[in-house]
Image 1: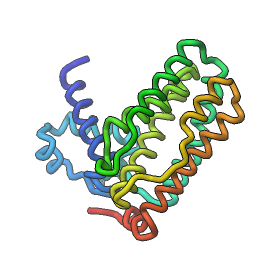
Image 2: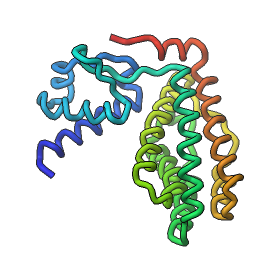
Image 3: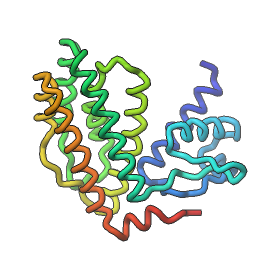
Length: 228
């Protein structure tokens, strides 16, 4: 991999982090020269980074008008939620059908690591927890055998996690959820596909309901407003 491509990927990672953490608000116009100055990067790797983020749906390009951070709204959250339910449930079903002892061990290890790191009220955005939580969900579907399907799941997780972070920061607390991670692991390892799919769907939808509660009508309206 050449140095310019590596640099562009590093810039993309920084931009993605700023978008996911809400430092770049939904709808924010990304003015190229200003971005070059902020991120200390030349125009070519910046454009490459923005193109990569556009492919992930975190940035939108509008013809000659340039780039802006993908907007957020109640309708978009519902879209992300229901698409994730269907796509991730498919990956989970295939993973359960195809999973072997190595997959089972990976699921148990990921759940153990997550359970040992509960969220704390004094830390609204805990990057370690975010990584462990993503790892837990990824482990469950890791044996599906379809790299593109896993890629779609990763993209949906990016969007879903952005809403969680926005909701937590706006509501100044974490979502209050039923503990379903252990039950989902048990259903998956028991090869109970129907129960596992039902638990996953309920978990995702319950989490979305908490996002809406934390954001409130005012917060959702604010997310929908374009930012220049």
